[in-house]
Length: 448
Ligand SMILES: *Cc1c(COP(=O)(O)O)cnc(C)c1O
Image 1 (cartoon, rainbow, N blue to C red):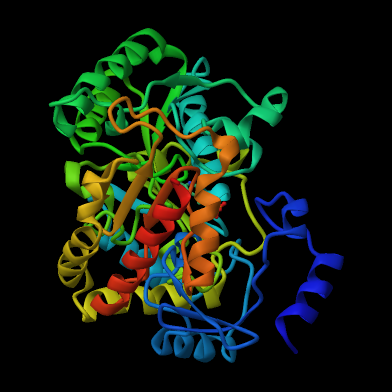
Image 2 (cartoon, rainbow, N blue to C red):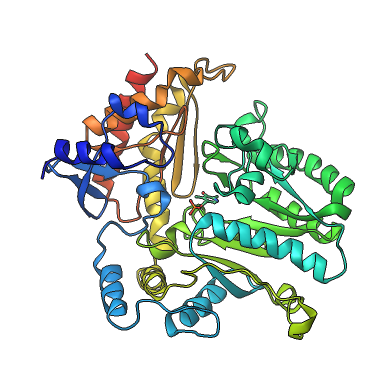
């Protein structure tokens, strides 16, 4: 088997996610044979450093022996059982662990099997909570501009990335969209904190106006990842928590991308010292091995559904693979690595190295900003540094960085004009240097 024979077979039968398939008339499609640590290897033994953790899911490297072994052990014991009327030890242990490490008011775990499904469950739960407590006028959601919460219709509706959403607008429920605290947009001389605090005024206004009809505010804490890695200050989450309490509106923290250490703390909400009413987790939860997601919520919300069956207040929502035991075993092994290897502490050094590896780009005439939150570093290419005028999207500058990366053995997958690093936590200093040097030469070519 070689690359080209696989490509031919692939293009005859597959329809790839998030892809204009016609692009593959000219763009390479890379068949991967195996992975080890941060490295992926194709069928002709060419290696690629996975700088984006395979769409932000991988935490401790490909083919990690600890996670692989946990899965092997689980497979021969119990591969799957329905989670209604039945239970299993991996699901219970994982729920106990997640409740233990997540913000204090989160006391219940509802499993699903991917990020979008977790968002859907949280939205439905919030609406249903208000219905069960006699507030049937609450049917709307408040979201931030430039936010992303997944691709299924409910998750898409509460997102705001036009590229994914615009086409499907007639199918989507309407939301109240409040301008994002995105600090790339701050005035010169303003700090992230000042800008985030200033932007909160519009959220406060929206809450004051719409509280009676609003179930929840949904946010991606600290980083709008799919929205081009735009970042903001924890003060915004702090103020939002206070306002949600004041106006009797739920707070949904979508930590699907930022959870499990990406922002420097285990969960991003910790940096604001905030407990949301719902926290959605997925992606890194299994170390990047298997699909699994969870909605964590409070005991107070759980109790609003707890009643005699005849009163029909139960949350009758399910997915076939809810809480799959193999996925739970992978998640338990992942959490074990965090704990035993003191990952959050160790990552502080890695984060520093990540940031310093591209700090010199700050002065580049076509880089509007190099920004960082924890283990995520983003470099925004622009046409005019002074005005931050972007390159027109049609020019697909990011794609040039992507192609240069592939040629030079680094998997960078820019979001529009934004090149970013979100690598597995097992990356070494030398590998960071390689990743940074390929990103820099790629940017040089792309901005020409
Ligand atoms: C990826 C992502 C989702 C959707 O998760 P899927 O597993 O791809 O459905 C939702 N919210 C955020 C913040 C994400 O980054």
